[in-house]
Amino acid sequence: MNFSESLKSNQDFRRVYANGKSYANRYLVMYVMENHTEQNRVGISVSKKVGNSVVRHRITRLIRESYRLNELHFSRGLDIVVIARVTAKGTVYKDIESALMHLAGIHKIVKNRDCDGNS
Image 1 (cartoon, rainbow, N blue to C red):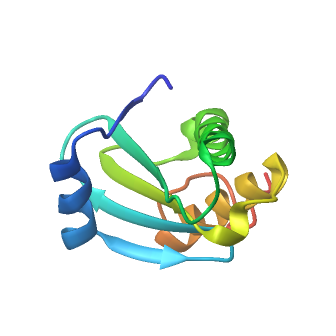
Image 2 (image 1 turned 180 degrees about the vertical axis):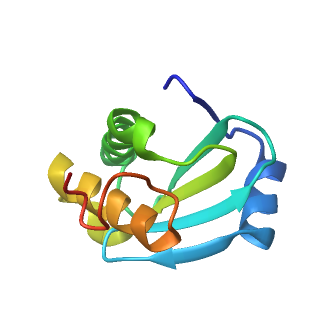
């Protein structure tokens, strides 16, 4: 991730939850808040309700890779928290990528893409 770093601290996640704007779709919930820097900070949360650690880590990797491959299309200066819903458990990469880009389109934080994730 060239232009992004990870959100790691609980305090940062809580700040985004409290002050950010959220939208959801079938697989993901996305909170977005401006951070007034030139970088994005991305946090991913997958609850134990979704599955065991193998399932949770797989979904985390799918979300991170979806963001990484589409990072150039995202606006900069944002804190983004992506939360996986229980329905994300059996999904494939394309479903997660489509859900992520759909939410980015709703938030209007994506450039040069429509909200379905097509170029």
